[in-house]
Length: 299
Image (tube, rainbow, N blue to C red; front, side, top):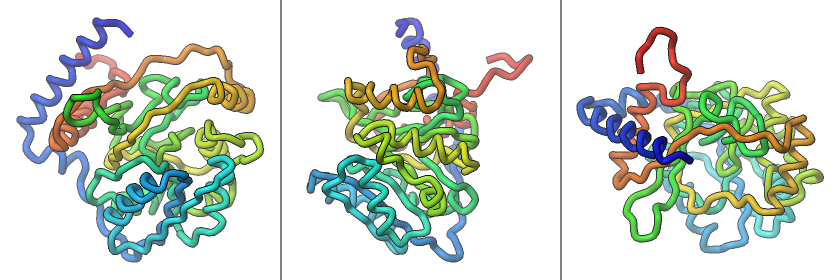
């Protein structure tokens, strides 16, 4: 919230971008292409949507990125809640991997499918943003060192490019994740079969994601946030009275202080090209953005 922080953030990001231009092959080194799986897993993408245009657009994005893969898309257009809708879709799905997806996203990473399958070959569930510590009903409340991932949003009206919202870039794959953001959650089927979404407690459209992943990680599921999967989200969360109602439910269930102040963390920057987005992400990973300072090292 302080002007000095925003000014230093701009200088930091400008320095990272300038440094990245002196490092040929940086993006490929930080995000090397994974090997193709010997047997591609079956992918089921589960989407709750009441907007035909949104559903058509997100379906096209998945079909483009998963072309040649055994893919099915299960749409639910009359969900009573996201928990109820996702449970109903998952029960119908045939996939080895279940992807719970918002209907207003676009997959940006060209080889999204191969990277997704490679991660889920040895991890139980992944998302594009999440936290390794839970202090409140928003994953970002944990602050730096404990929040991980990135996502693109639309820039302010009349501006070019996209807003990159970035949290910790401590490792190529940030593991020991406790909760994931619901914009995109992909799990091996057994995770949903063991936990499912709680359609009774979360009978609306908020906090279903934190509850599901919090219970799954608590039961031993290995969750992670890989930093090589980028998507564009056309909307941002709404923290209205209805959200606060479910937030209190989650805080009570998880034994959290509902009045605890969130810790600062994350950054936001407007970038104009995909090359800039990739270069900045690679530079942030190289310098382990969000990691604790190492004793004796100057920063």
